[in-house]
Image 1 (cartoon, rainbow, N blue to C red):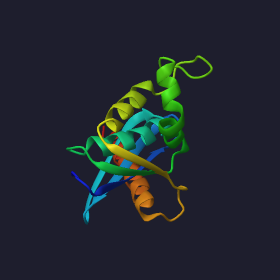
Image 2: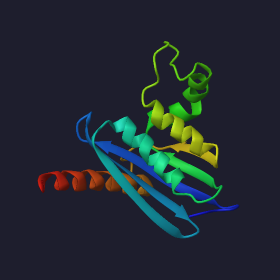
Image 3: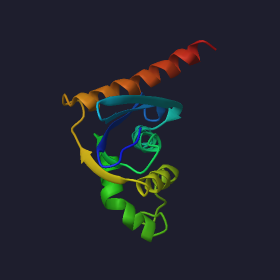
Image 4: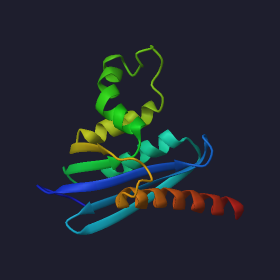
Length: 154
């Protein structure tokens, strides 16, 4: 998927059964009437890692510089990328309390991807009926179901 002047809308969500536990992420990318659905997961992870992974994978799926609106229900992702990130970088990836930033590997990857695009961030309340967000949540949970089904086949 690529865009020139038109904006890609990316709905992202993460889910975890237990925290930590098996987790999944989902992303729905919409552009010019097209839709692409992405999902993935990890056997032992956290909800925050899955929320970050959803945004990362949505941006990584774009093949060229794009205008993107990322719609997330994660205040962690929203505040991290729009408020906390500049300070973390200034402090060498440490929090204001001088502790290492959690999930630094994912934050650094997200920061790198954001530099390649014009990204607008929008927060929505989870499970509030926002169709794209609900679909991303469904994909995240489907990814967990697939992980769990695979683990029972062993």
